[in-house]
Image (cartoon, rainbow, N blue to C red; front, side, top):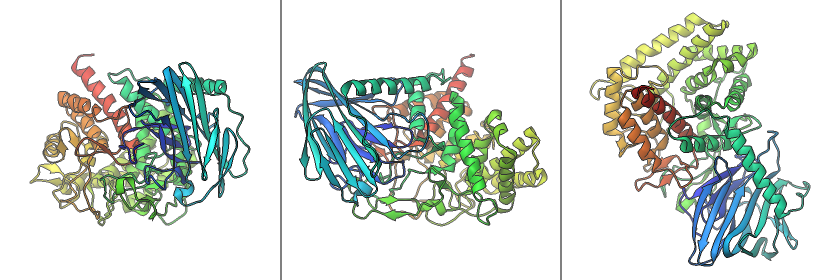
Amino acid sequence: MDRYPPIAEHGLVGDLQTAALVSSQGVVDWFAAPRFDSPSIFAALLDHDRGGYMRLSPDHPDGSCKQLYYPDTAVLVTRFMSPDGVGEVVDFMPPDQKATATDRHTLVRVVRAVRGTVAFTLECRPRFDYGRADHTLELGEKDGLFRAPGIDAHLQTSFPLERDGQDVRGAVTLSAGEAAGAVFTVCASGGPAPEPLTVDGLTAQVEETVHFWQTWLRQSRYRGRWPELVHRSVITLKLLTYAPTGALVAAATMGLPEQIGGERNWDYRYTWVRDAALSVRAMLDLGFVEEATAFVHWLVLRLHQREGKEEEPLQTMYRVDGDPHLPEETLDHFEGYRGSSPVRIGNGAADQLQLDIYGEALYGLSQGRGLAQQSTYRGWKALARALDWFAENWDRPDEGIWETRGGRRDFTYSRVMAWVAFDQGLQLAERFRRPADLDGWRRARDAIMDQVMERGWNEKERAFVQHYDGDVLDASLLLMPRVEFIAPKDPGWLSTLDAMNRRLVSDSLVYRYDPAASPDGLRGEEGTFSLCTFLYVDALARAGRVGQARYTFQKMHTYANHVGLFAEEIGPSGEQLGNFPQAFTHLSLIMAAVTLDQALDAEQGR
């Protein structure tokens, strides 16, 4: 077992309320419950000694391992090959199809030998509350109960267990065709024990979970050139969505570094208005209306949340249940992934002023007439009040999309998205004949357009730049043609694309910006942003540079991990960095694939 396997050496399983990472060595080294943003139970990725893990794998010194998903599902299969035989561990979490919030969550691990004879070893070493809470163990022959303050964890197996302090070990040897199982169930303290475990019952659960995912995916209307990549991405977005509310978290993890040994280690287990609102378009493009609708309803509730208050109508991010309180603190007892500290929980960026979120929110709300029409009159009034407030407040420096901690600036992207907010608001009001200050919104929209064209353009660079009165380029502006702020073949935009290609692109991979040229208040460097690379593909395709777009897209495929997942960034040696997997990256992959398919079809006369 590696102390710190590469971030990319993992698959994701989940039950639509929380998720776990399983390494290609058969180790669950990240799991939080009962929600994505709950304290961790297994967090060996952040501290091998103090974080906790659950290993189920062979011990053969000459073995090798490979990992894949059962087709079109979130059922993960880890295969182990050795001179003695071939074995598999099948990992999954049964999804809660009622989509009601629950404190009971189950991780199922089925082991089987498919050839020869395979000896599996189990180690279960939970560490509750980010490794801060002690636990006790009550051990039976084939079950164990771990008790910690406020939470119980039941381990059930089909093979004998033995005590290892307050942890558990076990072993089972299987011949070809034989199977065994281990089930880890968490619930509130004193909750009822799980149903007795049987191997036949686990086999039936595997089949039920496979059926759930394959049935859900059949809704997809994607018929383009990259079905495996696109469908893996949409399954990942589904796994990262908290079903009881429809809120999409930015990633399943916290604290994974953007630079090994650096301080850019953030908690991404929350719902960013920006990311989730853009996911609405991606989900609708593929035909997943229910998921898009659920988030729209969640977003409207956030607008209601601050009605009658003096503060801004929206904040940057929320917990999955809409709670706006995300105080940031550090876990000083965790060493961090390969020494990358501090490890943070909560996120101080929730208190930042990021004015672009109103544009993304309106962009999400306006996607699809059916969704917009579902908004109630009260919902519309909350939206209209937010735009009325924004009409008086859009022209302010803010922290911007990248949540920099180096002070507020007049970010061009924030102004572009402010234009989107009023443009989409006007379209909705006129399309559905809703009461609105049309003249006020139109004046704001037009003033923003004039301002961006005059102050966001840098004549020396012949490009739109990161912030007014500067010359730093910023990849967030790649969204300008998608949101129709500028025509995709406008000479000024083509010149901006050329400038980005010179300054921000490295072997088709795209940096957000140059921190050395535009200090962001943090030490260290970062890798290329996978989100930005897919936005680059989208912009190239819209600009008619279809061959370049396709080649860039194909090259990006080579950076996906072995099961098609992407973290936030790509490091200098092609390694994946940052929290994993990242929703923003996968939704931008879908957007790029759809745009590129359309461009290629048009080019080929389809």
